[in-house]
Length: 266
Image (cartoon, helix red, strand yellow):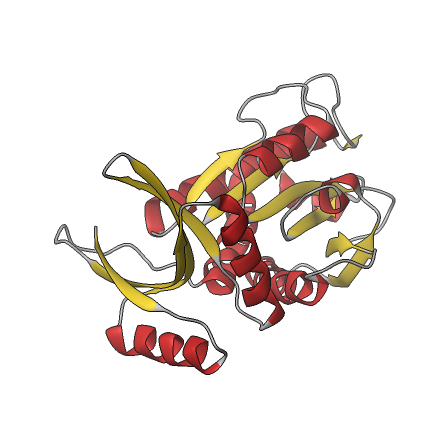
């Protein structure tokens, strides 16, 4: 599972500014906290960020990075302005394949962020924003409070509150993509990964991923090498319990997909 995290703005683009705060700094703090939570507490994913410092990077550069990396999900983190209050999220407002799935994933993420922060819920919205329009994978843009509203700004100045925002994002991603929690012990943990296709050619992988989406299955691509050859596996879930993996295989087979379980030890 490849997650692309985009802290909005940066460098010469400060984003919104008010109450002694700049959007670019807050989004980076939240994004770094989100990355750290996912890396420390969850398995089954890799992360790339559009920036990890105060760097100027254009919108097209950001989506190109995500698209070229073949990310499975993109999340762009922002702070709002304009005199309102609370939290809202955006997906692309056009007509496109996978829109229902994109909004389903967003719904899970949105609800967790509101739950963790207790922000006023401004709703799940759609817009023609570059980050959600030009990404080749499901994408969401989150607006985490209003920098120009004093009450929100006072919260955004607290490191502990930024941690809550980041954790809401992390919990939402973990729930949406069934990311397994890391074992609390140092013992080797076993996970049962459901594979719904293994191919040498990328075009067949994309066809399988699209077919799975049409049937309501979220998947990601695992690339590995064996005997000098590169293989692309289409993975539809990673489970700690064998029984849950067996159920997923049964559902896939019912929809006409060949599937098997790959046992992975960490």
